[in-house]
Length: 461
Ligand code: BES
Ligand code: MN
Image 1 (tube, helix red, strand yellow):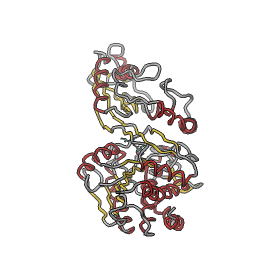
Image 2 (cartoon, protein in one colour):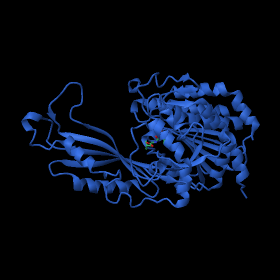
Image 3 (cartoon, helix red, strand yellow):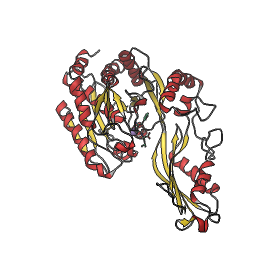
Image 4 (cartoon, helix red, strand yellow):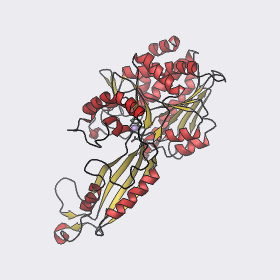
């Protein structure tokens, strides 16, 4: 164990917490143009701290959208392994009116938690990684070379990152790439993810009459676009919960017995999390797959929102001219966004009645990822969690998406590891997002221990 680095974390616990709050105060919302300056400010804030820590090089690299912050410390020498750490510093939008009890960009500490947008997704991960790096570098005890790459566009689907990772391939060279994002299913039981779903987002627009009409003058003679949209949407699933788009499941990599058994170990925790966090009246979905498999190993089609007609206060007897649905599919290993988009297009064209016109537009694509859970690097992570938590972590397949993972997998000749430290019930993307401070400090200890385990598990000759 690296006691010097762990002691450094202990003695700086309050200062680190203050810094986490400082970063959380910057509204680095990547999905809204008016926050462009805030994203830059967050990037500069991180770069300043990296310089203070003593990284050899620190760069704020401009991209088409928001900057990537890149830092390098090669002080462990050329025989030591090099670790590249990826996190994202951008956040989702947040407004008091969404149901926040305290202002989302004024971090508020209560009962061992800090409430703020980005607390769990993902500034606590950014800061756990940055402060763990500080602890090993400042105490002169780092057994590994460290490169940090903090992205500012993850919440807007990381469109830049494919080119960035390709162009910067040489600078990113490493033995192990750590992707620190996401969260765990339980407060008391750690898990390590080795699978992420992909996501393809789309807009389905249905047009009927050339503009909104008086529903008395024309009702009964014009196919209402909202109704037509609802009819189309209703045909996208079978009554057993499976997706009815022809070919939708064709490329899905099926689970073998060994993997099913591994996933089953975490099932009770995932079921409990479902009850506590989703808390819907009852479970829904594909009956042949358990909850963990449905979330991690099965693709889905989701309607994320519907727009059209009049839904304000009062009433407007209107027959709308158009209706729009936001639709997304979560994809699993072996599926590709483009193919799924095309299959959905074809199907929608066949089920659209001639009384309306429909168009399905592709918005964003992120591919699914599956990483080798038996690699030495993942084994080092397992040991690190076990040392810090005193419990063997479960291996899980995550339902969420981190688009850059596939880019890293393709561009680098490195082992990949996914690390996460917080709890899933912390309202990522929702109101009153928070992070448990005890889990956050454990994240630093896990990272420090992970570096130790890596060196023991990997020799470079
Ligand atoms: N941190 C999440 C992804 C995540 C969630 C990983 C849960 C593992 C478990 C990330 O910030 C996120 O929200 N990603 C988006 C991607 C999208 C905007 C392309 C997602 O999954 O919806
Ligand atoms: Mn997110």
